Image 1: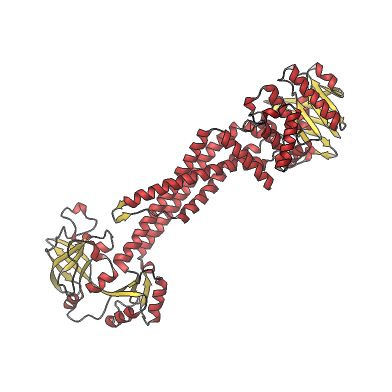
Image 2: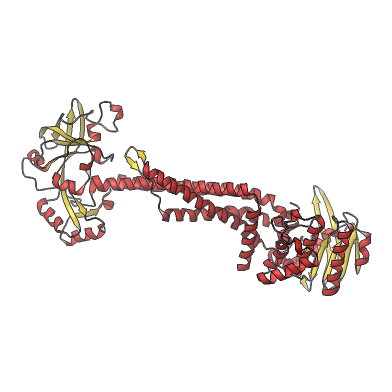
Length: 400
Length: 222
């Protein structure tokens, strides 16, 4: 077995060293490009997924979100809940949100969305919306203004808007809000933010005290409580601690709390990634297969000689598989160099997507996994043509 | 040692059946230097290919040292060729990516011989064919005569029981042809190896212990 492998490698090394250099280099280039293709799309998808995750954490759920049980609409005694959560070790800060349906209108444009109240001092500790103010200011405690997401504020040219918008309201403009409880109020736009997250930028916020005024009572309920964990903490552990500290409500990490739409999107990305991988592997098999079919046909005579002098089919096939694995090795290494150059480039110049800047994620584990798949595909592409020729009658093969 | 029984080989060429061998039976003793002759198309190469396990007969059998080699599966025939037979072909049949040394070494490598063992034996064989100084040359850097001598060294390197040579002198001048024949005669005499050689040259005949003459796929002499 080992001596057979030794002869296969010997024959392969001589074929590569003394065979056509241009052909070998072209094959290496093909593998490098196929490898880059396999990694690049996967990396872009990984970057887009990361962006989704980051946006979910930074603007929508924070690290952990506490929501009412499914048969309840709100969390009760929210002050007690906040006190309890803020005492939990490894939980950095909690912020309560209370949402109520509302219709915003401005100069004939109308948008119906939930209007959410929060305490700005808490909110800036658990989300990063305040870091993305593009016009005006973030809300301050007891603020009587309204904070709008970019998609809600919209543009004067409706063609620039993804959703129904207020047609380009600016800071200082007045916006009328009809709340679901029938209260009608007019707010001055305090600030407009743009996170590029479809979810976050289609929201409107008011202060907790302003919501009290809308409800006509001091509000002690919340529709959700966002919890920021201390940096680097295991979120499952923090969630466990919250439960241990007597939080009775539905506690979910950001990952668990992702909406079904986003979870489905992730699944779709994963399917696209797998299809792309399969297509890349098929391309690799076909291209290398064609190259090695031509090579083995051209070398039928030589294969016939090898068979005639007693070299087994296993050794002959092994020599072609070894050749193709050599090409795979150098092709994959070249591909890794290309991928790392792309990484440097995209780190400095992220891909601009409508929902944010995507920096492709090149993970070594993914690269090694894909290199492994490519090795299998290459070996198959080298094996099949050699196997076909070695099955021929020795004399027929020798006649070329 | 070699027993050929009622060997038939029929090829189909379009609608026509060609009987390359038509009931050939012959026994060859160990250590014989056999010449197989006949006109072109008489079936001499076909007979050699059957005995050399390079092709299978339509019917009949070839028995070598009591083993019916025509009944062996493909991989065992390959192994049998490696361990029992040495070949020298008319067109040299060298691996063009391998040097003279590597070409000669290849059958030994396939048998799993150690590197030191290979080196000593290959250099000895190249010495015997007068090509030690050309050991590192590729076939394209050698003359026809030199290539054939490399092929002879390769055919003998595993010290085979049977050497099979299909018109090994066809592309050689008389001086090189004589050198090859002298070498065959020497190994036949000194090591007792059986040599089967196809030839159509009358001046080769004195080298052979016995001549098998074929005509239209049948043995007419020997």
